[in-house]
Image (cartoon, rainbow, N blue to C red; front, side, top):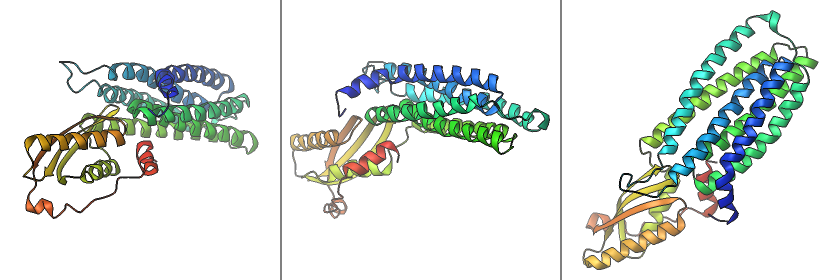
Length: 318
């Protein structure tokens, strides 16, 4: 990690998220019931979702950080993908029920009324708090590369947007006479929750199915290896995500006249070079093979490693 204070944030991000979202969930539920805002009641589910996500972050980070052992030679990182899968399934079911409920209310015009303005202030508070949580969790996600913390940061951003929409719906219902707008926004929120559930489910599935790293990161790793003196080519490179970490297997084509010891030292040099320049690299297994003529013609293809700002963009997904 880049800074010593990052360690403290990694340890506390789950607990901070838990405390903040418990408070938001209680506030939204209470204000939604008192004010009569359907959108605010549905918005409560965003905070409930983040409460569960925060709990899973606490559990996931503690389990995935356990050292390798005889029963788990590849570590415990995939627990984060399993927990993400659990979140997605639970919320797809709950959101399906909410969608049916809000559509039924939309079809009953006699139940449409402008919520009390207290809901507007609650929505604005939720926007501010969620923007803070998005920035905080997003910073931790960059440092840890944790799928669960990435999920928490993404959810906080989504929560801020939807809370802003709730505020807009309340203003429209009060000052523009659009009493149906509050319920319409509640329906939009349920569709957004369904989308988030599907997205989390698919990302978790890709992690469990050993998805390769993104192409910019893959190219960055290959460029570092190819730029190492003595490497003729890299005929094979396989990678996968194991929770927060990247694991890879690489084959180097080297001068066939090198001794076994020299080839081994070259592999170690490449491994050290990649490890020092690629964040969140858990393990990289490298073996050498004699370079052939068709491989040697690519020896001068020295693709430059990805610049630091581009690499940061890959890690943040922006």
